[in-house]
Amino acid sequence: MKKRALTGIKPTGNLHIGNFVGAIQPMLKLATDPNFTTNIFIADYHALNLAEGRANIRQNSYAIAASYLALGLNPEGCTFYRQSDVPETFELTTFLTSFTPKGLMNRAHAYKAVTQANREQGVEDEDIGVNMGLYIYPILMAADIVLFDADVVPVGKDQKQHIEFARDIAGSVNSVYGQVLKLPEAMISEETMELPGIDGRKMSKSYGNVLPIFAPKAELEKICMRVKTDSRTPDEPKDPNDSILYKLYVGMADEAQAKRFHDRFVPGGMGYGQAKKELAELLDTIFGPAREKYNALMASPETIDKHLDVGAAKARALAQATLKRIREAAGFRV
Ligand code: TRP
Image (cartoon, rainbow, N blue to C red; front, side, top):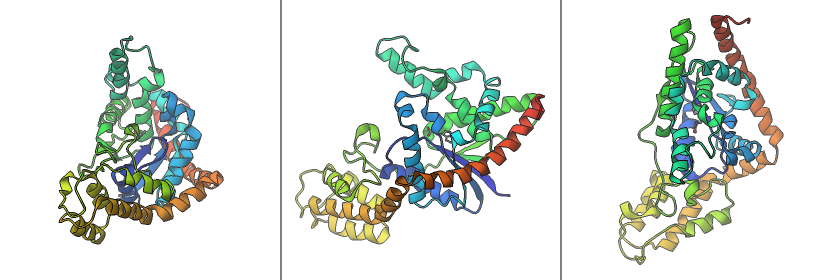
């Protein structure tokens, strides 16, 4: 029997190459793995509890969908949908609230981060930005997962607690009704690659140090020129462990490209200017074709909707079966 893998992606604006190697590539691989049936969805409701997420849900959701499709996700090989197109999610969320100890939510990282930030600013813990959506976010996430009887949930380390909560919550439902819900397991890959940003810190939108996947070529070239380097001359040997430029190039290149770069860069011979130019060329070769597809999709949101509608129909059929099981167990009419 195939296992079901499920993962959600929050619709936050433009993706960067750090997202690509860390999350998108592994997800694309999973979606074609014959051992798994895969659900991949845009977690648009998860964006609602923050002011900045709320402002751009529609456009950001299209952007995420177009990104994955352009980068090679085959919507027929998996179930690819928008969370908000599967309203069964919200009935299940309501159901699960009654099986979730309030104290569990008090311990949730996302909520605690906001209360902590408030305290540091000298206001009461819950004065700014703490709405109930934020507070029960882990319940919504548990619903996303158990609605589809997911076996495994591939996520980053930061999401581990949420998967544990989902297990706890599903477990307390089962302790009342028997085995109605499947307990999911987190699938956390230790060896996912992390790329540095152009300033050497972790690549992150909040640091403003990213290389966007779908930026126009000229913009990508400009950003590559800003990758931080030291003052070594072209002829001086360079330490690969100490070079952001090297890490970026080799992180993205195939073996042969990496070797060609290494052999000119490390012993000395190639200067930083040339290396930056080559990084921009490499990124353009990798992402150029996907960028065209992305732009075409973004110009045709109805095409994106068509793909997502197919996914939502598949997802809802599964979701309704689970919900029926739950409603029956709990004594509601089905
Ligand atoms: N909370 C996840 C994040 O911030 C996104 C997400 C929502 C998710 N629902 C999910 C991930 C269900 C895995 C399974 O990235």
